[in-house]
Image (cartoon, rainbow, N blue to C red; front, side, top):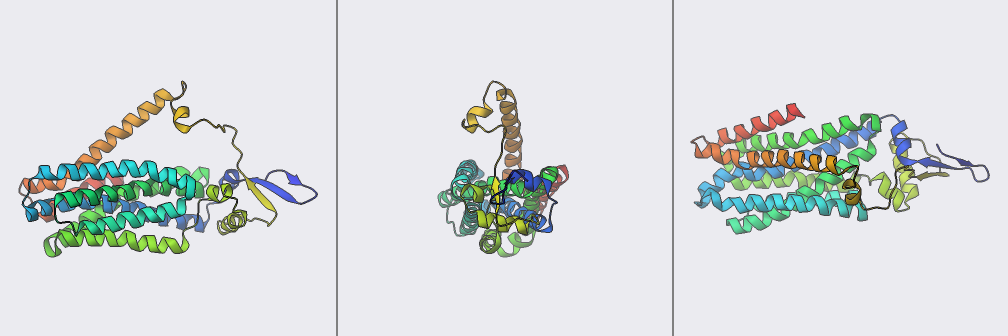
Length: 313
């Protein structure tokens, strides 16, 4: 609670401090569960190509090397989507950017089942990657904003662990679907789930509290805080108080003399970790199939990799 204007009864309340001081309500936990589903279908869509590759190679009669540009385009789309998704979320709101991203990668994953050659698949998977990449930062920001600081680390860990859980689901679908219905059905199912989630989110997912405040949507923000178990009066006015506020671009801050070493080390560690992870789950099913294992065992192989990811997280 901030200062009170005695004449008007208006109370200034710091938004972040108010959320941090409140209990972690059932509504906020339900939002975490919903956003964890975003990461699950994100992992499912991202993993679907690796699971389907052995069947695609056999069906189209092409060499593995023909799909290297496809996987590269998919990862390039993820990188581009992460940047664009974060920028758009800042400008137009996290809610609709996240919903649009989920719908995009669901649609493109389903469209992968209609591809007739590697060129078509490359284009489709590039846009698929944009959707996948755009969903990650916006989902993470919403988890962060709706969770009190003392629970935030746990909430982020819970959300992120659902990315490898999505990979496990993809492997399970591969076991059940590939040998019976074919690789097309794997893409159709993996795409339908995020599309359904996007439709559901369009009906109940709330907007980011900080975006509502910045957009001047104060009545909507007060209603949202009440749903989170934070009692608000009509005359309460939320503000953002930051002692470290700066107008400098974020990149300039991160590369400032006091932070650049830590920034570069963190970037390098994430780069090498993600490079190893994406290399493994993009190509392990194909490598196992090449060594003589069936499609089912190739899918089981990638499930065990993601199982380790869940334990590690």
